[in-house]
Length: 307
Length: 305
Image 1 (spheres, rainbow over the protein chains, first blue to last red):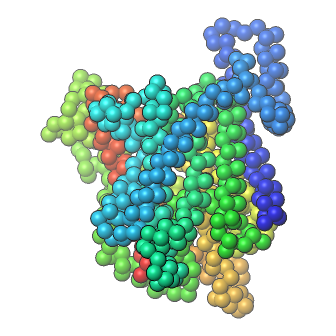
Image 2: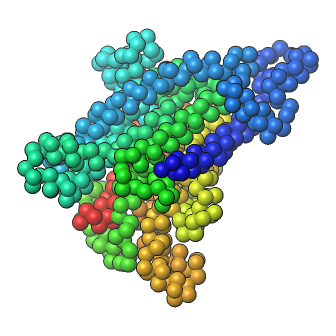
Image 3: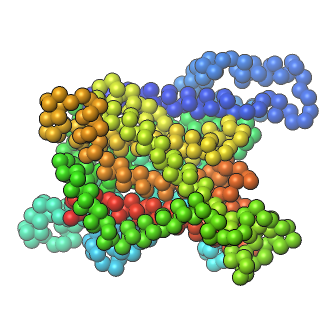
């Protein structure tokens, strides 16, 4: 196990550098001159221009810029944007919002997703089962932005049940965007739980447990469900990382000031350092989530051997 | 296997399960599958819908006599009528015609991205799975690197670099971001048949690597790939619409459902129909491919029989 952990950590290193370098190179290639964009229509004096170019290492070749950036990163220095504001400051403002949103989505996935999956599996072929299969297929088919708009117009504007946009009502404002963000994964979780539980309910150990005279509740809750949730948990772990990166569309529709919106705005205004900083952080979250899931898998399912 | 492969579970979960049992009776598996599919209602419905959409994409003139570019500002935002079933959009174009013509972009991108991604995945995935060792390490790490980038985020950054975003660029970006998932699937599927007796037998009889892979390994490892590729067409169509909606996919004057929804969003309260129609067509298209994938999975997965 120790060797496995070490190897997995080593594997994550090239992935981290590869992904961040890719992003860095792309931002490097963004069209336009960010320094000139800074001053708008007014001409900028050559001395200031040269000074700014120098401060942001814009004259260095790509690899050197990347090296300097990574050098700063190990000291947890994400650099400054072109207005002189610390990128880490922007991130500490935006990340909590996205994390909250992702957590709400995550909560819906666990609560509704697993519940629906279990109900469907226990009554296979019944009305509930078909309902779950039908709804999940439909949710998977409707693109997030269509779903978001529809929810916003119907539940927010027409019925007035939820705030339409923004965050003025605290946690309550997160409910609808969270549901929209989590809808797709919720459907996957429900289907995964159902498939997995249906398979396990046919397993020998479940028949043994039933034959021993255990109550149905105990057989399902203690024996079948526990094993069935292993793939669900691994999916959820990977998804938590993906949710944060996937929140761009939802944040746009509901006007939520999270990292997704920030990245989008920053690309538009050529704020390369902010884009790189946020994406790097997201990649880190994603890699760590994957790592934890892989390790969790080993703990939860002792049949898996790591050689 | 050296790692647990949790990353590729999204969407491929059920697909992989059929792989082991496929071995050795390939012809009868596909024949069995076909026999079952012919009686599967979901398959018939989704296949009909997909056929319909393909005809719509190839020959939109069959469905409408008007031109999507015949826009007259004086009739802007008229409601649905006998002449204009879906009404008229803000620029005075017949909306029904535009929605019909919108199928073309979606189908082209959905099918071509999937085709390229599958092609790349078959070559790289089977090399990684079959040869293992250094080949596997290099390919798997490359997969991980692209996989580490959230798709929408990656697409936004890449497409922001491109000034003239046309069909070609959107397709390219989606292929670049899409091949890793498919490659992981092919790799794990190939791994599951690589050491079977018939593969060893073929090798013992002196067959070369290429022959073993193309004649023995791939035919028996392809079932989950077929299932996922079908679903993938739907996912890519949704992705294209999302990018166009965000304003970083196709650009006007292209006719795309995503663009239509993006234009409709500003007046969604007064003209909800302009959002509804392209949204409905888009969702039904994605749904058809997902249903088709589900039907194929049921037919190709002998465990459920």
